[in-house]
Length: 196
Image (cartoon, rainbow, N blue to C red):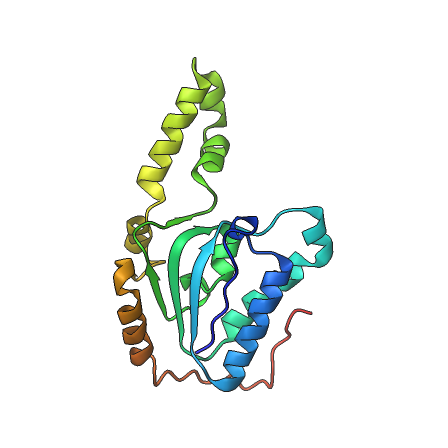
């Protein structure tokens, strides 16, 4: 089994172009070795900024997405804490074909954080209210309570099960045992057109 992690204390765990490239290389090794992939997700999004754009974050993110989508080895995703936006999707989400997706009960799966979502979705309501800060705080709390919990994701399908963190190892072993004989028939073409 291959694993890669980056420190969530650095840039808040945001996925930068260097991180995406390193994860892509680990995935390439796993695919060549036929080793299963376990992706532990704690990502608040892609790292913003002009330096990231010039460094090729879109290209590296596309390479990462391509690698996950074309992986034939067993793939298990565990969402630990934050799972926001496009960075969550490219980190082996259910929408790109992970075999098993598990989530801790403390995680947040969303397009963006609650504060940003409340500001975008309810901008006019906040501005029109008599107390914008109190209205914003109420909307953030409401958004978190209704949409940013793993049970909402489990109900809709992006997560297979919400697990106790203490059971993570046992559940990973069970998932990998279930996927031991995974077989993916390869297409008749020799190779795809990987982003460069």
